[in-house]
Amino acid sequence: MENSDIKHIAIIMDGNRRWAKQHNLETKLGHKKGAEVLEDVAKYCNKIGLNYLTVYAFSTENWKRTESEVGAIMLLLKMYLDKFLKTADLENIKLRVLGDIDALQNDIREKIIKMEERTKNNTGLTLNIAFNYGGRAELVRATRNIAKDVKEGKINIQEICEQTISDNLYTVGEDDPDLLIRTSGELRTSNFLPWQLTFSEFLFLDKNWPDFTTDDIDKAIMDYNSRHRRVGK
Ligand code: FPP
Image (cartoon, rainbow, N blue to C red; front, side, top):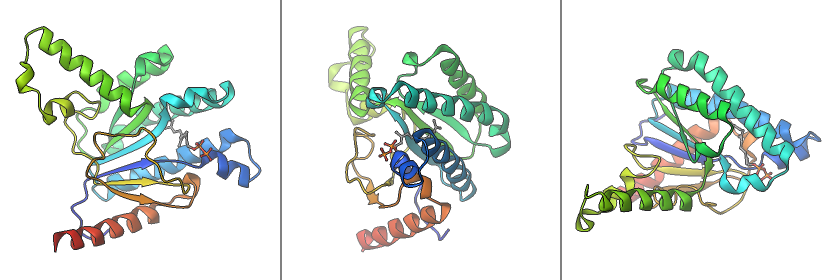
């Protein structure tokens, strides 16, 4: 990777079902391939020294999909977490889940808590998996937390500032994304990180997520760097 000040990439991993259809495969195999690609991309981002990778794996809207598809994504998350618990220290990756984990099955929630605790002191890439995540819901949650702090006398209304909001989001303590990538040709942000993406560069790619490779990360960073050089002039 060429020199870059990029620290944080966010990705909307879109197009798994279309990829499965193109290959005459069941939908769940598209998600399975998507999870494999995510693993490769996360390892690569760690290797090149990126600080944060934030991916959208399951939105609050995704519950509307069929029971079998939701079940397949839950199973993939479970498998990912199990695998991750074994390799996280080796990779030095810190894993965080952004979203309402209270609504998930007990065993998944417990695995998430265990894995976050186990990897919290790792110093490599922070991999944020947005799961049961909705950006507006995140802002509602932050507002409730802040209102509670006001009610309990912990802060005054006049003290509430932008940092107060950032401090009450799932991404507390992290730098905002420099770049958002969305695959599969859709040109929307779909309730993903509305507060955090305010100043980010956007890159929309036509390929589906299962066709994404680590070369696409290199190209995206080169694209980001060329835009930033222009902005700096
Ligand atoms: C979007 O494609 C993808 C999702 C809603 C699920 C993303 C999930 C993964 C990449 C695998 C799961 C990984 C973990 C770690 C749980 P789509 O299904 O909306 O495809 P379409 O746009 O072609 O319909």
